[in-house]
Image 1: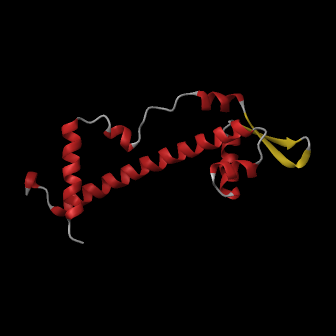
Image 2: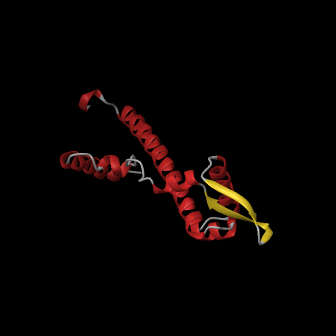
Image 3: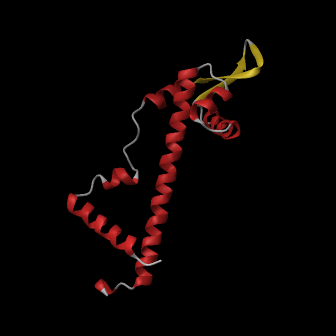
Length: 137
């Protein structure tokens, strides 16, 4: 075997990499969803939960949980609507506006990290993927 690696060792190593990359993608997705919620609140303020959930194409319960987290983080303010006390008006706080106006953090996504590789390294990865795709099932 090349470098003394066995199929079992390579499979375990690959599984670990997939797990690490999956966590990275989940975090990136969560940050993207948070940014989408903040943008929706900012564009629609004073916004209602139904308006926000429709804008971000998420169910009201999921949007409500996410808005709760943004309220706890101090990024969104939730107050009774003065014209309809049964409705809550959502607005960005100053900290929420600052957060939204900041450029996104450096791209730590898998695509961003791969973008830093040399062309020869990308080609080596491509070749490895081609081999993996040919493995019998």
